[in-house]
Image (cartoon, rainbow, N blue to C red; front, side, top):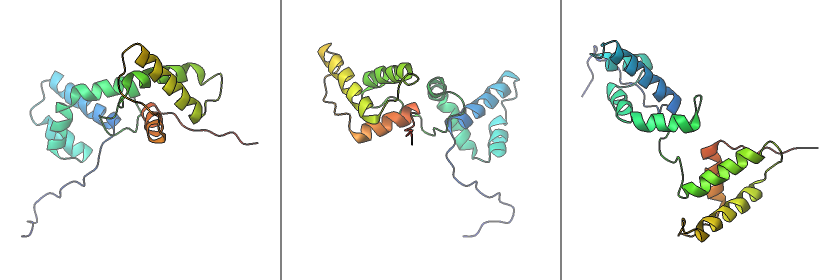
Length: 157
């Protein structure tokens, strides 16, 4: 089966970042406010070189995208809506707050983060808010750092 000469090429599949999805939503909202919603998704799809169904999916996930944007902020390279909190959201939240409070005054190693995470989990278990086992494995720590934009910086000299 061959394509006709007049058929438009299918855009190459590419995953948009949350920031790009947010910008697409702003364009959709702007068009809807101006009562130009008829055909706006096709125009936006052509502008971003994506399929109209992708625009529809982005519109459907509007609330999730706004929620993620509140957490990660503009300019994020994050592409996925899930993996925002991890398996232990209360530990994540406490450790992220602790890190934000202490990262300016002292260097925090990955070992220190793991120990602090275990301490927070133990505190939550004693309060009855966590029931499952938690090991603060290397994989958990790597994902935690990725979720919260924590980079490992080593001083030399």
